Length: 347
Image (cartoon, rainbow, N blue to C red; front, side, top):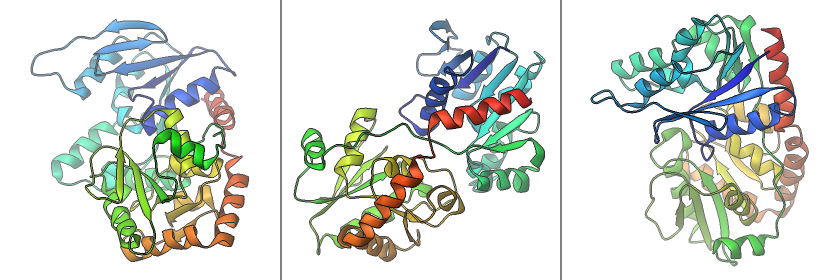
């Protein structure tokens, strides 16, 4: 059985991390290739072999690049497309009579489209989901959305949660020194693009600023964009090692998402003993359970109150950390790979 994982996102981003980490674990269980479409370099990489796709004037965009790159895919028995935004190439791959599986992390673009043109784009990007032989949903909430909004057959949707490698526990002072962060401040960690409403960065930053009169506190955020404030440190494109240091250097992870979608940082936070302030979405509750302090994502006051409580209430902190470490053990890439391999065998 020849299998390939198909991806177009670099490993520094969540979708790319999912693809590369899953591939590494699947390699321990089966013979599987990695197909990576690199839009920046305009190349198709199959394992270590590169094929130049080149540029076409006036049509040099990401969607058309992916469509052209798909023409050069080698033949496989199973193609596993690792994010829903690539599902439009299912129709092209299906011509080779192979089985196709698509991982769908969310249908946010479809549910929250900005206008008619945005809706049509989402319909195009997701157009291959109905023709896929199986769908892997990252959460039960995503599975329900696929059934409700896209009318997919429940029988072909399988839920496999996201996962995380083991995150080493590092002394907080050592981690801060390596990152150049102050030793005497409380540090709130946040991951998300500044202008991505679902990540709730603006409200999170305002919640931290609200506490600056009571505590010496900083928000260290990772993501595109810059929030101008003396209480905010903006980071972008940091390495896995630096991310590990930041988890250990922080006092709390603030992840009060405004939309119900999979959330990789909360799994990573639990793994390294970092308490979490989160919004009570069904996807977060499904993964974290009682190992987070829940707040109203639309209330700066509540987010601020939650952060303060987790930082200052020692008993609460210790309880959340203990629960998180226990729950986090379940979410490993090796476990996820075993579940995915079973789906390969079913199709």
